[in-house]
Length: 278
Image 1 (tube, rainbow, N blue to C red):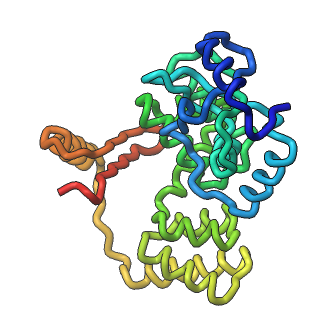
Image 2: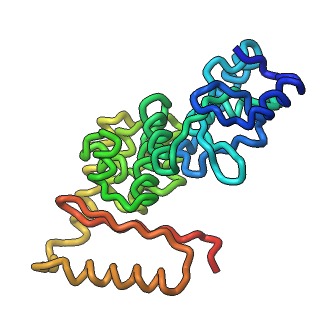
Image 3: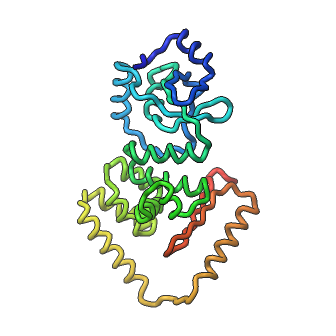
């Protein structure tokens, strides 16, 4: 058990150990602990945070954070980010941590696996977890699934939810509209997603009613397009065009994150460019 406000003597004593013993519970000053830059949690529940702060203030941090060594003498959080944030809000000077020895890749996978298995991530945070792993290490979706021991179909379904714009994701999370609603929206282009979500919220549609509304909207859109379609025997020309466009972006020095992933049935491109560029 650790008190929420350790004394100066305890802090000095723990600093003198130089935090070298992997596997031991160490009391590390907050200024030497940093959040994982590739963390997946995006949304934080204020009520849960307050409850955690009350618990820590009363009983201390019962379960230590897990950290690994980072650059500049810092320690990167693998698990326990919410406890870390609560400790900062309480004004604690140090937090109990278990130090593990791991390289960057293993530490990242350990952290993501812990989040997936032990933290209440919503569907978008889980999708971001898969996406960050894939982009960080140049993996395909299949390789990502195999690394984490997750069915490929589940990874594909989650990543597809990232087609929903962040603004709409936030509405879904804040209104406690679960993954079922998100999957419905992901079947539509962005402009239709906003239209459909507005109706779901205003009319307080059940999941079943939302599916019906989605189907009706698809039928209406299809009717507008008509029956004339262009037919192509091979998509190679389009893939080559996209590859050349991505190469041109990289060559121009634009700060873009480009991911190309192939599965058995599809090739997916994801290009992220900061709005601050230019």
